[in-house]
Amino acid sequence: MVKAIVGANWGDEGKGKLTDLFAETSDVVIRFQGGANAGHTIINPYGKFALHQLPSGVFYPHITNIIANGVALNIPALQKEIDALLSAGVPRPRLLISDRTQIVMPYHILFDQVEEARLSERQYGSTKSGIAPFYADKFAKIGFQVSELYDDGVLAAKLEQVLPLKNTLLRHLYHQPELKAGELLSDLLAWREAIRPYVADTFAFLSQAQRKGKKILLEGQLGALKDPDFGIYPYVTSSSTLAGYGSVGAGLAPGSITEIVAVVKAYSSAVGAGAFVSEIFGDQAHELRQRGGDAGEYGATTGRPRRMGWFDAVATRYGCHVQGATAVALTAIDVLSYLDVIPVCVGYEIEGQVVRDFPVTTRLNKARPVLEMLPGWKTDIRGIREFGHLPAEAQAYVRFVEREIGVPVSYVSNGPRRDEIILR
Ligand code: GDP
Image 1 (tube, rainbow, N blue to C red):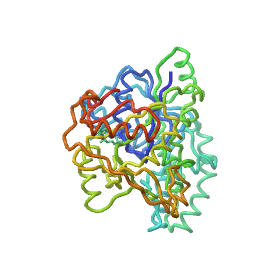
Image 2 (image 1 turned 135 degrees about the vertical axis):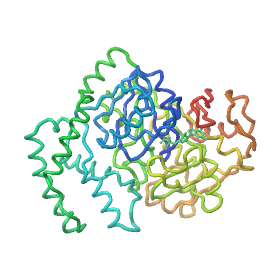
Image 3 (image 1 turned 90 degrees about the vertical axis):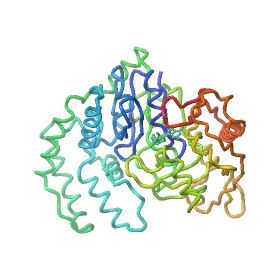
């Protein structure tokens, strides 16, 4: 049985908490895309952790955690994450890294930085973790697979093939010092020892786990609207954020992913550039960002203040649809408790017409939000465990969201702690 937890918005929906919750009853937790460029925030008895690459099952000794082939593996950053866990008293996690996973090279991070600098005010708002250069190289077939680290001949030949390409750009386009093969090679040799205990044929492991009926959890990073195909291209990430990609990025049969929980936030937030139709500004945004302080409205990886907006039914319905959501977890509804009335975006006005279907980016850039006002509840709702005990207005808000997106809201999260959740 495979369950996926994925974002229906722009990321930061609170997937970390949900994955942590579902991880407990899983046997295997898998990261299948993305890399160190985003993070889940998890609060548990060991403390508060920002996990970037480690799957959320690392706090449970019974779980096998997999960094699968679809991930952009940053080895030094992974080492830091493991060390942070160990120094907080977490037992060494059971971790497997696919031998087919590719490695973020030092120059991927460098290229991400110098390219954003070159673009100046036209930049994408990259986290500068090397993700775009990494995936570009993977598909240009000049990436480094984990398995290749253990073959000295392949490594040397590959560096010889790749470095002239990189150095030409560095020297002539970016006016940077050239890379030296010897330095890169010594990094790679150190890295291969660091991950050696974890490297495995995870495809074979997963095939066997499935045959044995193990419970497998796929953990998505970012959200549907950051998907390179279905998101707000080009202001997207460079690997697919969709549950469907879980099958490729982890190595599972497409039909095996039977449960897809899309995480939706009760309002909107986003980091980076790109159209954000229901965005709010100034004091209004500042207040929502502060109220969402618990919801970490400062990027988990970058610390950047997030862009804020009202709940966007157009984008969220589409996000759930492209995810193939079978259930929704609505998070951070407690953050809205201060509002007298709660605006929600129910349509986009584009060139004089109101649309309810999420458009391509060129049209999205022209969209203006059509807002509807819902009554607020003006009372603290944290700690409530039963849906029926929520104020009538909060119940109505949840039902409104459910009607708009057309997927059952099976979980309502009303606080950052793992027990602050209502099952419907
Ligand atoms: P992810 O990338 O989707 O995992 O999202 P993050 O973990 O970066 O951001 C979610 C933030 O929201 C974290 O700081 C969580 O502790 C917090 N959070 C999750 N659910 C809730 C909720 O229901 N209410 C509040 N106030 N905060 C929440």
